Image 1 (tube, one colour):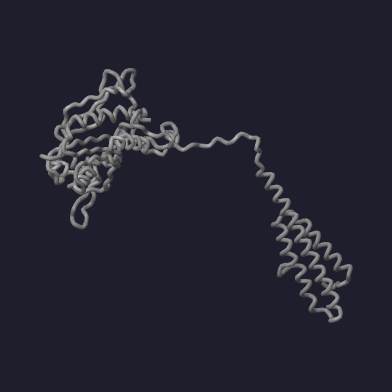
Image 2: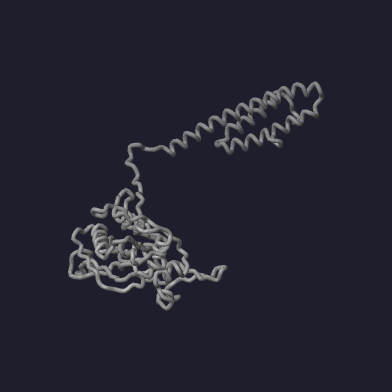
Length: 361
């Protein structure tokens, strides 16, 4: 700057203040500040030019430039406050809430039908005095097969039915449990009668279609004591099925059958109606097989260190998906494991619904 007159400095000040005033946003104002007061800014360059003036002229010019700098800094601060207020005002207008509008509809979460069915089972059997027992998903041959009197040539041991795992460090080949019966074995090995447990949980079999899944859920029950007989088994199952389906007079029948781990064994059917192309559990002319049961085989008791001359008991098991499908009218097993929110809204349950022994849900 060659002209250090008062008129030239006043023109410079007017131009810088106009540059500040024309900044319409915080970003633009910051850019103007850097252009004026930054290391390479206009006013900074003028201050550096003072070194080329004579001592007498430098004093007056320096005083005038410092006053100009203070004026510009004050203008920047004032503009910054004004822009902040304006931006806040715009934000408040954009985020304004009309309290007279009706509230937005809130989506309510629902329980999946499988946990719901498990809660019902646990509640019903809990009122009968059964405790919940659990076991590992990966089992050895003894707990999954041998202790349950399942012989080496039984079809359940074939690879097309069972998921076998690679041998471990000791050369033992384990399996993904094919039923929750190993939990019964572990319970009888770890505690003395009286025993009364249910063991709901995941099981695994090599099968997949509309009514079968490679992973599914079972619930099994075991009762061991000195005076248990077939009448106790029948009474327990009739009470459970009528409570679960909520039908006081639900027809229930027992048919002779065969299972390697029970003797005698029985399939359990419930009355149903298939007229009109629909399946309805309850009074009707038809029957529907729903679970397997029986008195614990003496060999199973011996394998677990219990004296079959002193103790006897009953056991039964059922697929949780199957009874849930029947109760809630779900026609296909596969949607249980699909993440389709529409199905959950249709078949789901509110978490505050509490199961009861009296009428189910």
